[in-house]
Length: 599
Image 1: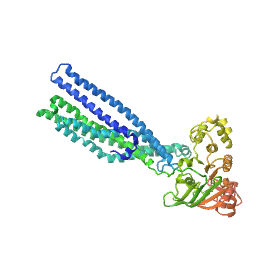
Image 2: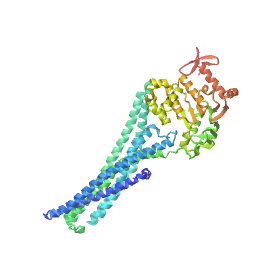
Image 3: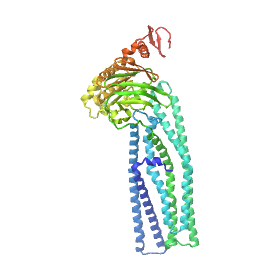
Image 4: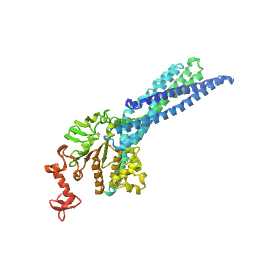
C-alpha cells in the first residue's frame, strides 16, 4: 500500500509528512478530550448537579481542546500546502533536469504527449498521493492504537473488540489493491494514449484535411475516448464496491462495540477509573466510531493514491532512463576525432562499423552519403546523444565521456533542418544563445543571413515568432536559426541538413555563411545535396555505416567511386538531364520529356 520507491521521491520533504502525522495525532487527542468533557458534563447533569462551578472545568477543558483541534487543523492545512508546492516544484525540476541530462536523446517510449501529461497532470496526482494518501496511511495505522490505549483502561472488553475489528478494513483494501494497481496502470496508459492521439491529430490537422482522412481520424479518437471511458467506469465501480465494503466493516465494527457497551450496562459491569456508568458508556459509544474513521478515510484516499502511484511510476520510468555519461574535465582543444567507432541501436545489428573521422579545429568537413548510410548517427555521437559500442570519440585528445557536459556544449553549436525557434520575440530567441547580446550584434548576424531588412520592416527585434515559426517562411526560419547560432559564437559547429527544404536563395546564403565560419571555426556539415560540400576541405563518403571514401571533392571525383556516381547523378537530375535526355518532373519521379516514366 506504500510504494517505497515513490516515497523516496520526497527527499528532504519527508519531514513534513511526519510533522503532519504528529499534528493529526494531537488533533485526535484533542477530539477525544472534547468527547470526554462532553460525557463528563452530561454525567454531572444526570446526577442532578446544578452548581455552575461544577461545569467550569469540563467546559474550559472542552474549549481548550476545540481550540487545539482548530489550530492543529489550520497548521496541518498550511503544512500540506507547503508540502504540495515543494513536492510539485521538486518533481518538475527533477523531470526537467533529467530531460536536460538526456541531452538531445529523446525520452525513449514516452513521447511528447506522455512526457507533458506525466510532468503536469501526473505530478498533480502525485501531489495528492503525498499530501493526503501517505499522511492518512501513517495516521490510520496509529489512531486505533492510540484509542485502544485510552479505552482499554475504561473497558478492556470493548477496547479489544473494537481493535480486533479494525484490521478488517486494511484487509479489504489489500484484497482489492492488486486488482486496483492493474486497473490504474491501464487507466493512466489509456489517458496518455488518448492524449498522444489527440496531439497527433491537432498537429497533423492540415494533412488530415488534405488527404480527407479527418473523418477516419475522428472515428479513431472516438474509439480511444470510448476505451478511456470504459476504464474510467471500471475505476469508479471498483471505488464504489470497495467503499461499500469499508463502510460495512466500519459501521459494523462500531455497532458491535456499541452492543458490547450496552451489554456491559445490562450486566452492571463497572468502568475503569471509577467512571459513572452513563459517562463511561457514552464515551465508549462516541469513541467507537473514531476507531474506524481514520482507516475509513484512508480507504477513501486509497483510490486517489493508486492513481497518483500509477502516475508516479510513469515519472520514475522517465527518471530511471539511462543518460549519456559525462565527466568533469574541461574542453582543452577543439579538434574532434572518431577512432574505430562501432555503434548499434539494439545491441545486435551494427549501424556504424569501424568508423574513423577527423575534424580539425579550423576548416569545413562534410559527411555525405545516401539516406540510411549512418550520417545522422554520426551526428548523434558527436553531439553526445549516444555512446559508441566500440571505439572512442575524442575532443582535443580527450575522451568525450571524460568531459563535463556544460563545458562541451559551451563549445558546440548545432543547426539542423528542424532547429526549434521559440514562441517568443526575435530578441528573446537571440538571448537564449547569448544573454547579454546587443542590438548591434543581433542586426549584424541578421545582416549576414540577409534578414535584417525583413526584421526591421516587421517591427524590429521585438517581432513575435509564432509557435513552430508559422509566421515566417521555411527559408527565413533556417536563416534566423543560423543568425542565432552565429551570435552564440561557438568553437565547433555541426550543420545537420541545415539547408533541407528551403529555397535556393536561402540555401546559398546559409552555405556562404558556413564557409565563412569555417575560416575560424571547426565546421561539420551533413548534407544530402553534394553540391553544397564541393568547397569542403575534407569529405567523408559513407555507405552502409562505413566510410568508403574520403578526401577533397576533386580527389573523390578522380577516384570515380561511389561519391562520383552520387554527385554525377544528382547533378544530372538538377540540370534536367539523364543520359543526355531532358527530364520532366512527374508525380512519381523523373521521366524523359515526351516519353514514359522509366522509374
